[in-house]
Amino acid sequence: MHSALELDDLRVHHATAAGPLKAVDGVTLSVAPGETVGLVGESGCGKSTLARCVVGLNTPTGGSVRLGGSEIAAGGRDRVAWARMVQMIFQDPMGSLNPRLTTRHTIELPLRVHGIGSKNERLERVLRLMEQVGLGPHLLDRYPHELSGGQRQRVSIARALALEPALLVCDEIVSALDVSVQAQVLNLLTDLQSKLGIAFLFISHDLSVVRYVSDRIAVMYLGRIVEEGDSESVWNHSRHPYTQALIASIPERARDEKAQRLQLSGDLPSPVNPPSGCSFRTRCPYARPLCAEVRPELKSDGLPHSVACHFVAEIPELAARPEYAEA
Ligand code: SF4
Image (cartoon, rainbow, N blue to C red; front, top):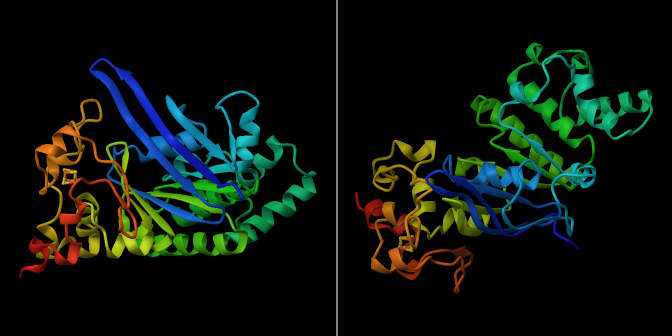
């Protein structure tokens, strides 16, 4: 069976006055049918640019994007086929919903655009979709400003499901919601996945959120994947110092003194002029001269998952790091 999504050496380089900005710089990643892959990294690491390539909103400058086994060029008539294979949900439902459309018209729009069903059939489908995402029929004629943040995000999810896509790309979709509403939306996604068998590419800066919903996790730094594998393996046995710093920074641990010793210092370097060799070397406590000269490749080398680091064999798991273990 074909993967729901295959990215092969995906690159998005923009020309700027200061030189090429490498937003995405050689990402190879796949999502199997019905699988959730979490993509995590700091703001500015390239994950949203990657997401926009998957849904055809950005054009790659190199590599390929395949959906359901087919490479679909952005633009032209293939966009219709693309829309039925992949849909995206954005962070800010208020910004992504048309304020002049009711819940009914928002969810119905993709069906009308693609000429699907009669008016009555579309209404039935809208009501079914609302039920699937936990919205009562009394919300049918409400406008976005008459809904709560959680309800608006449920409308976005129902609209994205209308064309029955094989893949949903979720870009920071719970970051603007209260913690209790976040949990409800995340539970809804896992529920939808088990019922509908949809694949998800779930993007967030928060590794604890990504871990909650994902089968596999890919950690991105400055346009490249630095650690990737089974969700529990990456969470419990992370070996890349960047992933370990992300885990140490999650809100539940951020106040812990031991965890604070592992948190990142300094800003993310500019993708216009990234460090040579390993792009993490300017923030890495393990960096050595080789790290400035040779870019490490993502490989497993006997580990349960893949890591891009020359000295991974010498880097202990998070709990065994001296800064973390010592009182
Ligand atoms: Fe750190 Fe070097 Fe490994 Fe990069 S390759 S993560 S700089 S030790």
